[in-house]
Image (tube, rainbow over all chains, first blue to last red; front, side, top):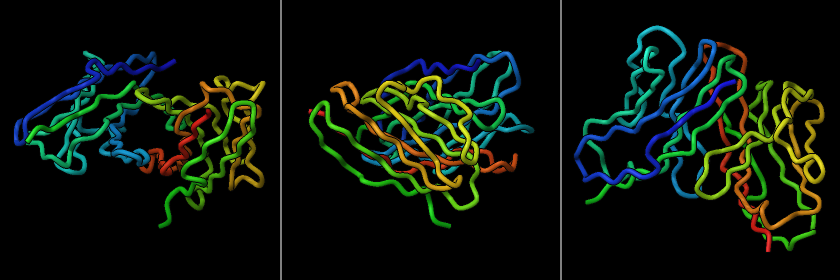
Length: 112
Length: 115
């Protein structure tokens, strides 16, 4: 079975500062990893995904994530955040591409 | 390409009443999911369909929740009778089967309030 742990429930950060949202997973098999963003009263939107190949994955809105198999991590980063990045961020894992398991989410608040 | 459509967007019912949610996935997507997202938590998978067959319903409270996907396209999730703890956002998602397209596409959700 797979599971996802998001270590920080809330992350406040000043505008134009860098941010890292942490995600660790557990799985006995190879996994595919995802980061989704959820704006208020909206569904989830895919930011980026790791399926195979390069461990550094670039997504939309300037976000990127690095897959680290030895540390079973898939942390999300952005070098300079904007007010519009304020949202809930979810890390998710699947091993077959069919069943998605989500973390509890990290609320990112960008402070002007 | 049209996204995942859900209706209604909002629903308020009294406990012990029944309610139904509808989902139309992206055309051609064989896999359809229903998730429950309680405020402050991540989405929890309730049921997963592959075409019109159930792949996983291990976390579906079957005494009150039911779901169907007729003809392998649209899906309906029903709660009968509703409890206060069912207040949540119900998200529908769909995914295709091509490896490089692996991701779940989500609808905007239905916010259920049980009073």
